[in-house]
Length: 153
Image (cartoon, rainbow, N blue to C red; front, side, top):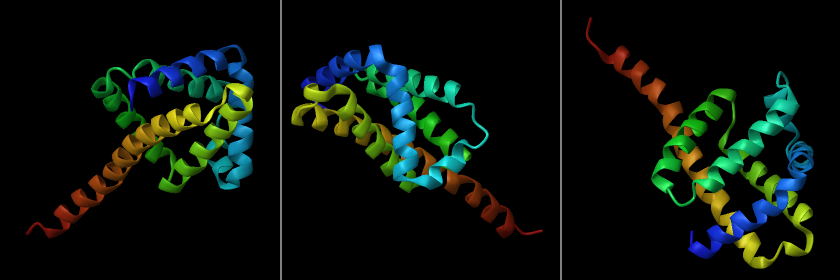
């Protein structure tokens, strides 16, 4: 990410802040339209609290863009937790599409090609870290089982 992309993401996130709750609601409605299977992931979730978690997580990530090493460890943890919730690699594409759509709707004329590129870049970076951590979390238990099966008795 370039410094200009980081600046654009921060600036536009500040513009979303006054309508953050509505934006989070729009995001989940759009996510469930794009990928109805994702609704199952939230069947036992209190959505008001979930919308707040989404906003807090995005704010944390955006505020951490200048400390990518520190941010990466937190995002890896998030990826591992999401793997435990049943999030698949394909869900990340649906989430990205819903996020971009929500931002475009909320920002209106402020949504420019440069802003779209910046948000796409930040989401690709964050989701890439999460996907990698989730894949490692899924592989690790299988390795432990395989090692136990190979050990002589």
